[in-house]
Image (cartoon, rainbow, N blue to C red):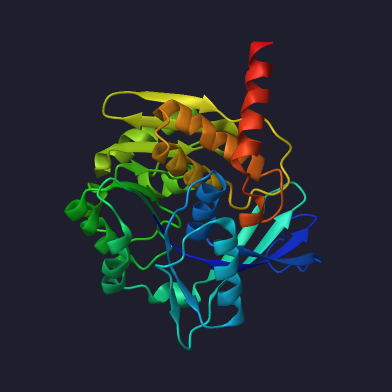
Length: 307
């Protein structure tokens, strides 16, 4: 099950990202997005039927977001439609080199409370894999972590965007924490620029209490560490079009791979493949690849590695 935010993304494609005070011309498109929603769609495209818990407004955007999730194969029974509220909205600028800037108005996402988390957890079995991101209100997120201790499901925590207020005890409920380079720096104070610095950051992350740390390093790959060992995997080289939702693609695919009982290193490798394919297309949910596309891509990479 996935817990997190869903937004309508207003995407401006621009030649380059603007400087402060600068105006640029760009082409506008609209896409369904939101970190939690993107992650759930990534898992659904790989063959799962994941539940997703979020809040949407009772506006046209909310109906559009629900429709997009259902068409992707995400189960929406746990989603709450908030009367009188507007749905989350994100303004995304994507430059020709694939880099982006994002500003979010959470809208109905901010209405998620601890009591609503409890109502959603009826959909969770004790052997489930649960993914949560930090866009939800902290009180709700903390209640989810308490429920983890009560019900014993496996918890993947994507700490994005990093915010203060999460109690130290909550970290001990996390099985996998999955920050990117920026988030790892914000959590540890260690600037992550390569696998060596990622190892130092992962060590500090483990000191917070999670069972394992999995840091993504964009075009470099990913670094994993737990109490028994560590490994790093290189990213797959691709032509980058839009980096929006690459981290969400990785997290959704990692969760799906664990649910499909892939070995840990293979799960990380598949997540890297999904993220690589994601950045070759524009948009968030629309860029999530199918299971068939991922299998074909991994097969082609295996052939290249053998040559």
